[in-house]
Image (cartoon, rainbow, N blue to C red):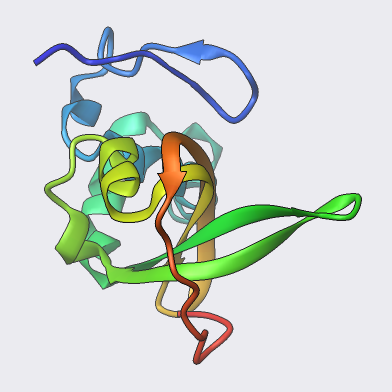
Length: 145
């Protein structure tokens, strides 16, 4: 299966599979958790941590994370975020790429995926899909988790 390059959060094209085979599966979780993993690695290993240490740390707590999917709607000069999906990470762990899943479940639009570790915000990523929107807003019972 060919792996597609993507645009990272800084606007640069990234080829996640060329040099780093650890991201072959669940690469998008690595992207979601990148800043959280760096903070945890600095606390645990000091400033000379490695990518392998970050990856090993991610595997220890990934099953305890939750995902929330929001749709981004233009509202005046800003954006409004409507909660449309909640998932425990083990439910989505087999996904190679989140974009086809989001497109199939919720249709077209701009989406934000937040990941939470034990109720604490751990990372976010934005995705865009094409097609007609078919999402439905759901009530948010808690602010985190």
